[in-house]
Length: 517
Ligand code: BGC
Image (cartoon, rainbow, N blue to C red; front, side, top):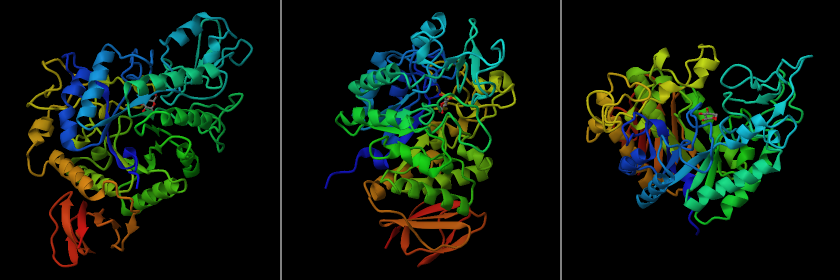
């Protein structure tokens, strides 16, 4: 029987490039820094890494504003550094996927610079959404759309036209009805596939097509800039490109769609391979909420034979330790949620630093860099708190992030010494050793397992399910719960399990894996 493609049950580790490891000592992470630290990831036991954008960029949105899709931002290294990193990752048995940002370019991209000096109605402007404004003097934006980062989604240029940007003004939206755009992105995909990447994470995958005529948004009606039918033509074309390469190349969509059916469309057999399940990421800490999002995720993907995905933290969301309440309780919940996630069918996406139990950082206003902070008129602190550079070793900042003592681009907290990789390595009970053990057991018991999940009876406030010989039980409550399990405990996210025979006491706020007798 043919082996299932690697991505169907891979554990993928997200690297936020600015914040992972710094090789040249400027306080900003870079590609050689990642290469030097790949051993950490191989030892952790993940199957693949995902790199956030590392392309030349003015960094208006830390790389999600791409000025050249075929290069490397000098801050992060060179194309040779990229090739070296990829080669080394492959040598260690790690796959590598990269972020592709097709919804918008940077305002510094050659196309947009040409558009700015070209006249209204020109071919150069037709790659973006340039439109006249409303009102007699055209001084009102062409429609009522707002930027996801706050403020209007339109900026006016000196000749009076406006251009669309669903994010920062430095991120003009491309017009995907223009065939030049599709051709350019096919060529970009091939550029990186030829270099050997294993796949892509597709940024704002559901936003590329806009409703004809760019109508105003209206309460109670679908948004005119997400999930438009035409977006799927793009991914059918991309799938043909990916399939034309050997080696199970894949793509995972970032598509924040509430509607399960709309979300499923991105992973139809002739489109992308996976889509993130953000409902799991934002679910409340309760047995009922988790059961609902798990069932929803499984149903959505099984409708079309796709592989489910699960994620708890990312560079866009508060870290799950803090989302679940912070402190000891938050950490206990986070560890329990991770072990539950790792038992689910499909693939899991981890975010750098969660293996250290890092909390969200309250970055002081004067250090905030996320464009959300300024664009929201300083009302939304933004996402910097989940992007603070990783502590590797030592007792004070920069905790071995770089070779010298340069301050990191976002300051690290003073109390991170016990959280460094060095401090947690070999330490019984540390979150790092716990992740390593969990990932090793996942490989041993679940790799390549094509068994669906089977819910098992369990008391209120708990969940129990089996997959193959593995049983996963989670106690979401703050009190011990008695569960019936015919098995031997393999790993606990918290205290060891008490009890013998079939009925055992599941400690509070804990997930335990068992192997069935
Ligand atoms: C990325 C964000 C980014 C946005 C605009 C996303 O959804 O994950 O970090 O700000 O796209 O590119």
